[in-house]
Length: 82
Image 1 (cartoon, rainbow, N blue to C red):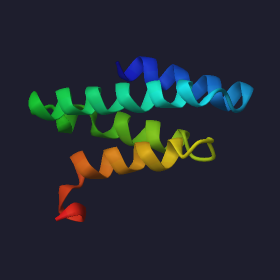
Image 2: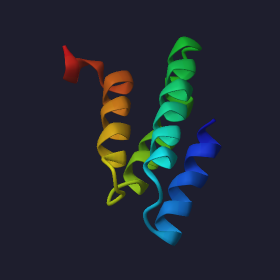
Image 3: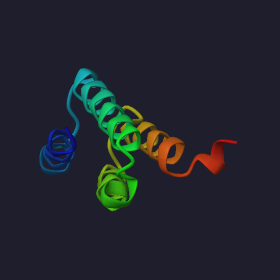
Image 4: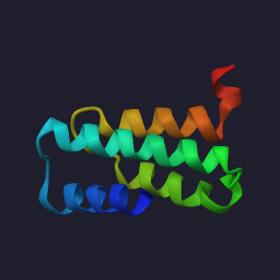
């Protein structure tokens, strides 16, 4: 699931903005992946990879970066949302 999002971010960075549905799919897949990571208590193993996805999405359209960032902070930095 993370690979799907990584490739989507790479595609956006290589070719520019795409339809909004493309971003929505990446956002929902990223959230599902992060939920599974947390449920499996594997945050230490995947936190860096998830952070890198968010960083590489900066500058994307349709609020994509903002949504990925929000998801990341909600699951990996929950004290920010307390």
